[in-house]
Amino acid sequence: MSRSARPGVSGPSVPRRAVLRGLGAAVALPFLDSVRGGGVTRAAAVAVPTRMAFLYIPNGVHVPRWRPEGEGREFSFGPTLEPLAPFKDSVQLITRLAHRNGTAGADGAGDHARASATFLTGARPRKTAGADIRVGVSVDQVAANAIGRETRFPSLELSCDAARKSGGCDSGYACAYQFNIAWRSEQQPVSPESNPRLVFERLFGAGSGDARAASLAARQHRQRSILDFVAAEAKDMHRGLAAADRRKLDEYLTGLREIEHRIARFDREPPQVPDRALPDGPPTAYSEHLRLLADMLVLAFQTDSTRIGTFMFAHDGSNRSFPEIGVGDGHHNLSHHQGKEESLEKIAKIDRFHAEQFAYFLGRMQEVKEADGRSLLDHSMVVYASGLSDGNRHNHDDLPVILAGGAGGRLAAGRHVKLPGEQPMTNLYLTMLDLVGVPQQAFGDSTGPLDAVRA
Image (cartoon, rainbow, N blue to C red; front, side, top):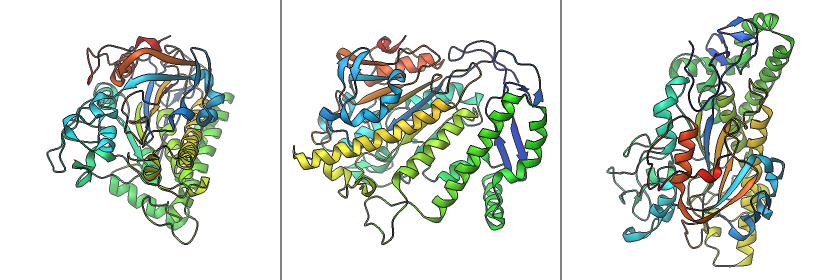
């Protein structure tokens, strides 16, 4: 079925993504130049969609170490963002964006809950620990409601923390505010998935949830890969592809099998549970959990299974420790640093660790080549940010914000955008919605689009 052209894509739309099917498996494939509607054809122009992702880091940052030096294209990364140096031409660092609805006002304490709740909504959450929660619809879901029907999944929500929808968590605020950044309606969060295996099965398993679970159990019992069930169809397709597409298919399936093996290791050794004592043996590295979920989001974009994703590294207020980088203190405790140099040094280590995981994600996106020869990153918009700046003071202004990707050449990447004055974070979202083909007159507490990020 052809799709009509949208502002978020360019050129005529010709779907050339195939699915390999087998017992309990439906392996979506990336774009293949010689495939159209499952058959082999001559190459033709194809629309490349714009993807949109939001990555959330909790508890603010060590601001002086995070901030860049210089403005415009003449900038350099702060010490904790040095891992992003290879992607300098693909990112925009934006300063002076704020979420004023995250501030205390008459609501008092609860800045961590408000930081998460306002992050993608720009709306003030109702202070309640009961079932009468209310905040705004999030920007990702505004987009999903408009363009989500064009893909298998309207959106994909990920987190390294288990989802929580009920109970009280932060100074009279419901846990739903703190553990979710995607909101389908004012009262309904979209719960993220934390288990990479379940995300993998959702993307590549076939049938209902029960059918996928049965297929997984059978594969695990027989020590088989999901690719073993589509091997015959893959072999048939391979014969009819052009040489370049054969290489691309082989690389994709090899990478998919490697990710499946990593998930199997993850299954055998559950990850460290934050806010609890470490087990006697070495826990699964937090970085591996983050990277597996990052791989899932890249695969979802690469196969056009969805064009919209959210990814919480952790909920705001998380007290996770970071033993793999030598930080045994809880993150939330450290964020209340009171100016102590020892605590600030540890926060800087955590900030750099987060930046390394973000760099991994950008690298994976840059490796994926699209129909026009540009990368998946070139055709995406990725926000990497926190709902707080300085965690000690619970500041919701001058937030640490990075916008990565090119949106098909429509973003002016490779700059530090220092705004002349404070602007709502939602102004950025207005521009992103326009670039993905879902223009809005207003969103949250916006005052107008942020044209400064456009090419």
